[in-house]
Image (cartoon, rainbow, N blue to C red):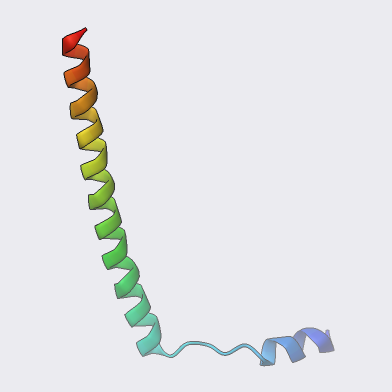
Length: 55
C-alpha cells in the first residue's frame, strides 16, 4: 500500500487550462478526420456506383 501511495504522489495532473485546450483540440481533430473519411467514403461510393453501371 505504501508503494501505491508513493507512485500516486508522483502523478502530475494537468491544469484546468491544459485540459480545456486538449479537449478543444481533440474535438477539432475529430471533426476534421470525420469529414476526411466522409469524403473518402463518398468518393469510393461514387466510383463503385459508376463501375456498377458499366457492368
